[in-house]
Image 1 (cartoon, rainbow over the protein chains, first blue to last red):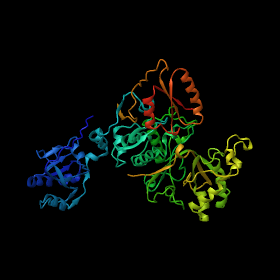
Image 2 (tube, rainbow over the protein chains, first blue to last red):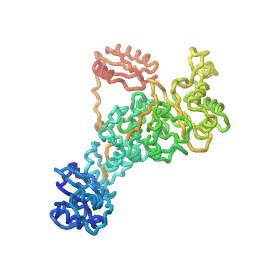
Image 3 (cartoon, rainbow over the protein chains, first blue to last red):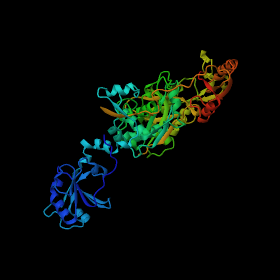
Image 4 (cartoon, rainbow over the protein chains, first blue to last red):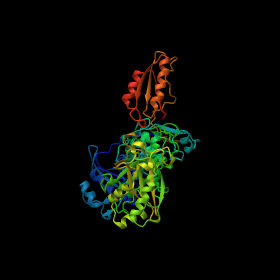
Length: 483
Length: 91
């Protein structure tokens, strides 16, 4: 495949880019001849080399290189070129604009004043992907892997160890280029140093994995932010991958980007069925696998693993919540798009269909949260609580704010150490004897993350248990999602 | 034929050469890396005794946190000071 990256130069003077298969171009054909006679116009034709006529001033853009490189998206496009550089352009037919640009009067007598143009062949969906690969594909640095004609694409990628076990989309040059359209970042920009191999991952390499995960281009900025957050020393992706505990990066998306890319924060938000939710987390995990080299049984030593290790990503339902969002509780603005990454297990369901007061529901939630990881393990692990709309209604009706809820819940989670000492009630695990007589909180300050999501019916909430916190483990990290 | 882009780090050579195995430990400097899991030091103390009996010099190192990779400086220190290294992974 040729990879001509040099833009073919435009001829100086007036230039019109046209195609015969465009009624507006046909309409202005006499004007083109007139402008050649009176002002030296050059015509560049995309389809028929003899349109509007066979002549030396009619050039054929047969491979569409000129149209592609000079961003022609409409025909006719009239350009004024000075010393090889475009000075002005107008698209479609407008007598006034053409006369102004060319400084020639009396153009197109008898023609309507204005007609819109047609799509340029260089942006025609039938050609656009091929052209992008041909003209900008060599800007991609990833090693090319040729799959033989008799190789099944899915089997070939599986055999090379590139899949988490589910099918992956073959990352062809055209698909990767299309994915890269989703970000303004340069493909060669580094995103993160990915463990366990501590390899720098570029935007391009992440885009390759995002294609494989099934992402759409508009998901890429979230994937970029999520990988960046996961690979911080704070979050400690190495430990999250390597630990025998069954945690993975749980991604919570806040802000306007969630709605813009169609994320699910409602029915089945933590489940399947929404492309963004399902693929963004998976793209991050595929990058850890493929770029970082983290394979189960290799550096990944999880005893059980969990569906969270395939990819776990959802959006918070901010519109339906009376509270500040998770991101706001972590210091971000309401209008900012962010992703929070939390080292968590799969969600478990907490059911309470009887509580009618916030006090009752809070007490019951505390009992459930107390059991996170182990009822006798205090302070060492964080957790995330996802309140459903039905449970949130208890707090909304009573006028509780997020702060009030957190205060009341923290008080309920302050436990008598005597109940949890090692050996008490015949259980060897527990707090050391030195804790006797004290009150011990279940979670460290900031160690319980609370978000709002889920369908409109169901008196349930979801608890996502965490992993070792602080410097010996992982801290949740929130970063901004930028275009 | 389909051409796809390699999703990996492209750093893995087709086959990886192992370092040459020493024929004897006598006279060599062996690094013992404690990754900071509880009681790893107990295991390494015993390994250290056995290595000394075999005539090896033992250097001890400790990783700051078991859940994180060893810092670059520590890895460099071990690589420059030792002929071989043993890690204690278990609790």
